[in-house]
Length: 129
Image 1 (cartoon, rainbow, N blue to C red):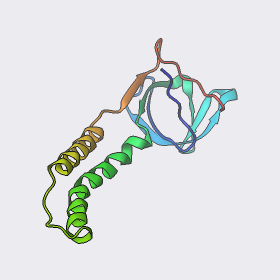
Image 2: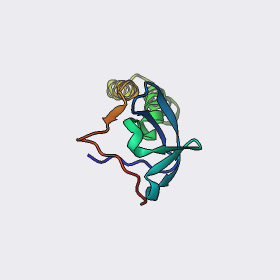
Image 3: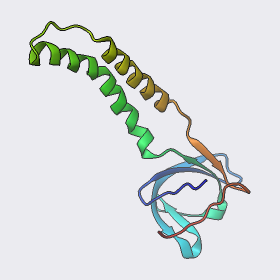
């Protein structure tokens, strides 16, 4: 499995022999010295024990799904009453779709971050792309 981090990604990691988890924006990669720069601090990649990964897609996407799930039935009812000039009723199909969107939003929100323990299975190196 290959996990890639790019400049301006926010990463969280734990250093060998340290209990603290550090989080910061990846500012630079120095492949020649095998270092990364996180929030103006140089970190040797050989000193990183664990990387916690959560891509920015997961961080805000659940809000969009939740908003869509809440607004969908109201927009459908608005469409029926105002646009189509019919008696507005709650469409069961739209309510089911709305429930699926809301459920998916909460599932995405509470998924755990991926944890990569650096060792035999996961390798870490600083590379230019």
